Image 1 (tube, rainbow over the protein chains, first blue to last red):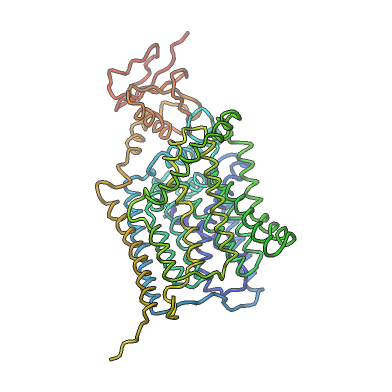
Image 2: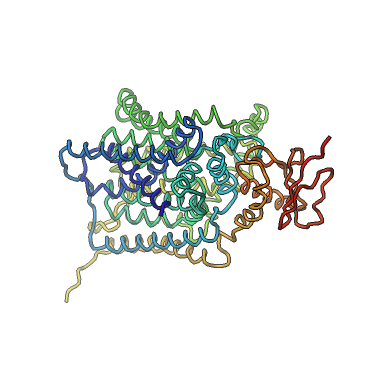
Length: 464
Length: 137
């Protein structure tokens, strides 16, 4: 019961936080689903930051923290209600390309996919309540336990005495687990897995309702079904891996950037900054993502609006991202030891790796194999997507958003390539245990990009 | 009764949409079926039994600090896994994979293996878990 309450409070906090910054240009009721889905992930992320600040200033995780969280939630709720009273009601600007005849069918299919995924997740959680695989319990789980059980000695968990425990990994997932245990009054198994499953479902929601706003509900529904079709997403969600929350934050950021392009409302940039910052607070890849987002946005805005507009927009993005990066920076510089990926590197060996052409071929081939041969379970949809695009056609209505999202994905892959190229570990080993997760992290964003480009298949115009 | 005519292009588009959506759904349902089968990607829970093995030992260990670890496991991968499972079970204690600490945890498959160099046996628990200390100098 208390576990449920902890999820509810994080979701409410996130919902009011998102709603406070959500531009008032669209209908209140029509925007609730996307705000709820964003709030689900953002609420959990922000409460983990709040708990981190509590740990730093108060010194240990105990139930007094819950008062702080309750207070923040109440303050956000009151602020939102006051905002609603002051601002005039407006009409929804949501795009409606819908052909109602097929919509109910797609809704039913998405609901079926969601129910099936929840069913699979329940099975996964029963089979592996501590999470499936090394990262789940030996990295994130052990950190949550050490912080929860450690009292004033919670900092001991960042010791370098335990090899391969990656004490430099950001704390969103362990601290989200700890706060739920604080509500429950003790350690509850499977909490970490429930968290990652909720992030996976929220990702589907963000893609579906983000596209509903930009391209119509049917495009969103098809995209939602496609996001859930990737078995690695479901596997890692049920396995309690932090790759799933980071996938959520990547997707949410790109959807919020797209909403900014469509409406030019600066608050979407603030929210995009928050979700990008939370990505950096989830996994180290998040830092690469923040840089990729800023760079892709620079290219698009310079091309369309010039330097002044870019600097203005960057300021809004910074309002969201900087406070979270500051928390991350404090963690990295004051608590965590340097990353093993950095300390094990030497200038000489890195130079040798960069000059080794076979390494480039090997990494490129690994990405190609993962894309074409697909190591996940089930059918590879990569082959069907071009066929789909060929039949329904392409629209460039959102060309600048398409450019930005596409460029961000490319920069992310370039970053992953660089990490593999310079890794101090055996590159084959490093790729073997991470490439499917890296591909998964980009999958919902790719689906979002795809349906921004694809014409609606249920379009009434009878022409190719 | 007259049915509305659907043009060729619309039929092709709907066909490819159906192909995509149903394939995606098939993937999803296949995965659900897989999780219920013997070849489930989630396997068996090996963490909970390890947690239970170390539960009794916890009462004899300090709340914080560093303890050593030794095992008679010969398989390198299995030994590594057992070491990390001990770390997970005993957090926030830091378990170091050597016998140089004042207290050392023995994690043995066979009871007769529970003799390790100069270490002094402090307590023997069930399931091959043993607590040692360094000899007094």
